[in-house]
Image (tube, rainbow, N blue to C red; front, top):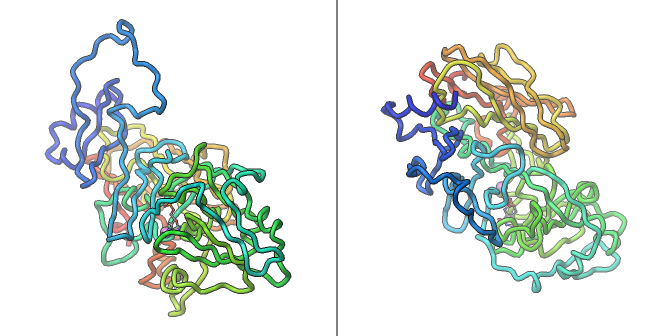
Length: 425
Ligand SMILES: Nc1nc2c(c(=O)[nH]1)N[C@H]1C(S)=C(S)[C@@H](COP(=O)(O)O)O[C@H]1N2
Ligand SMILES: [Mo]
């Protein structure tokens, strides 16, 4: 199958936009290389190499690097200081996002902070207001948790009935999602140190970037599973992820996981900051608006096959994707290969962790005809990923957050894959 896939593609007229990459080993890598300008290029054709068993190999190096033919890239969006980069979900395997491919979302750029200068003030409705240095914080007992982080604006762009794109990649659509092993100190530990006063029910978290990102979080959530995170996939958090300290709220909309955290104020009500009033509120179908829609609803997305891949052949293909829920564990993922008429349970790759992405897979025998591939997750609370019609009904036409509706990929008889939700609505 892999060998066949290499040759026939070269005579396709649309090769510039749709291409398979052949690595030096002759294995077809299901990956496309994108430059920053979103142009797609093939990996350089390399001259035949000497037999590697006959020449000495390279020496060790202090920091490893990727194989030259494997260079996944984040897709960038920069509007002045407010910018984002997206994880190339279609090029990744399993669930963990390499730290250098974690998506980024900054409202005021990435500040330069020295770990020895950084301090966290914890005050408000507490017995003993305190300032913690990083070495103070890092001395407390730690926990590590594999959890996803998703921007609540993820998935925007395939919601409007009038503007349903066909040429959109998984990365463009849902790349504001990443999964890491986060290490830190439970915020509850620090709150026990300062002593929360009776009547307190919220906190305010504030970042030390030029956006001074400020969000209110219910105390119940903070005591449950919030982390003062400084570790990400085994090393210190990267500057882009909030070095040296971020709040990490598993399952909550990404915006509340305040990076470069410098202040926690314990309060008896939400603060209604600019960031949670002018933004991150959702219109509802009945004309009202909801605020503090914090938990991320369950969602799944097929990462392969997806635009702009081309299946070279009918026959057996593995449909692969990711599913997650901000409310707990994924219970099941169903896949449809006929536009939602019939659904079958996909295989879930364990361990199935709460508030983490889960890899799902489904073997599909393609008969070479036009069809629509879809996925639908159900989480352990019984919540089922809605159709776009159900979301329109609940939220009206103009919401721009929490767009977790079912996606569809159209697989055409030519093997070309495009975004297919427009075919259904
Ligand atoms: N201080 C601060 N915290 C922040 C932001 C920010 O701009 N400043 N962006 C928020 C948003 S909108 C998201 S989605 C996540 C993104 O985290 P990441 O950049 O580590 O992926 O951080 C949140 N925390
Ligand atoms: Mo976000």
